[in-house]
Image 1 (cartoon, protein in one colour):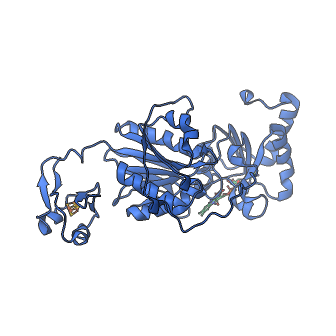
Image 2 (cartoon, rainbow, N blue to C red):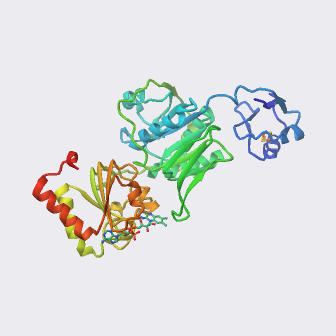
Image 3 (cartoon, rainbow, N blue to C red):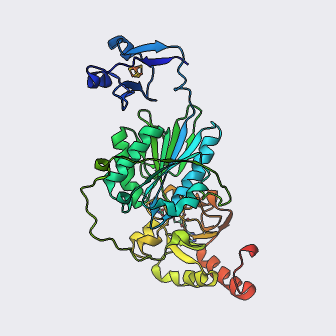
Length: 399
Ligand SMILES: Cc1cc2nc3c(=O)[nH]c(=O)nc-3n(C[C@H](O)[C@H](O)[C@H](O)COP(=O)(O)OP(=O)(O)OC[C@H]3O[C@@H](n4cnc5c(N)ncnc54)[C@H](O)[C@@H]3O)c2cc1C
Ligand code: SF4
């Protein structure tokens, strides 16, 4: 493949020639020489305006090299956040068809305690930034470490969990790399040209936008926990470990950690095994009593669509969907929920969905494994009675 070659001489006016490229493809390496990054569209402007530095070459193995998909593994309180494993699972499937490599990057302190977990990650390489300065999350050292990783590993794609930490870190890294970032993706696909299709609801959920990063690398996306399927624990690898250290000034921070306290863990629908989700089909809050009776029989947690949370029927932590929680229960029963794009974004991880809706054309039936077309006010008491009389205790196998 023909491409742009670079003469290895120190440029006189580096900034000038970097700005000349309309695709931000000209950069300076650590030795002060120009190099061409993956943004190059071979427009040949640089050949015309700075022929002393750039030339046309018929083949460039570095352009034809394999791509890599990187996953940032969040570490806190001695363990990896589960979203990291979910992203590795997705990265492995994205990399499969192009035979790209999957790499992970970990930033933290005393990471030797996680040695066996790191050793077993099913990726080709793990970049490790292990220093006491990373014991607490402070944006500058974490951002600088991740930037060092991007510069050294040059991943084509960088995936980060949309946790509070990830939401703080990802946009800062994307800005520093002058690349794009799509937040809260609900699906990711890889094209043959290694363009990542970042899919998420947009324009109030009226469309599922397919977003591409045209300029800039890596192509960055965040994904919320429990949206992608968790990696099977039996999948193990033997990655090469790359220990990296950035200089002291890059690990410094203007933020001083005075004290940190663990937030009490409130019960969370994202971990619940059985969930009954109710929506606007339930006419009044008082009507919820029959639903709570059913929930008790099933040992289920009751969750809500957004309009009911906004009406004060339940706390926001019990809201399912794009602006609520993503769930992965074994069984989800939806009652009087239409199945809007925003609600559906939170239930893709549910193993088995039973939907009750009086409207045969409700979109929720497209996602449900078992659809019951009917009035929930008739069906819920019947279900409760059936469970009380016949099953006694709930058993998944009998559904
Ligand atoms: C940026 C943005 C983010 C959003 N985030 C979320 C989110 O995180 N979660 C969320 O839920 N929504 C979210 N929404 C709102 C979303 O667009 C929908 O408005 C909402 O999901 C609809 O909730 P619903 O299904 O309860 O109500 P409706 O859409 O009104 O559906 C009610 C359903 O009940 C059925 N029904 C009525 N009576 C009965 C009966 N007696 N028996 C059986 N069925 C009956 C009807 O046929 C209907 O399908 C968001 C919107 C925006 C713009
Ligand atoms: S060919 Fe065009 S895109 Fe590529 S480095 Fe030169 S100016 Fe930039």
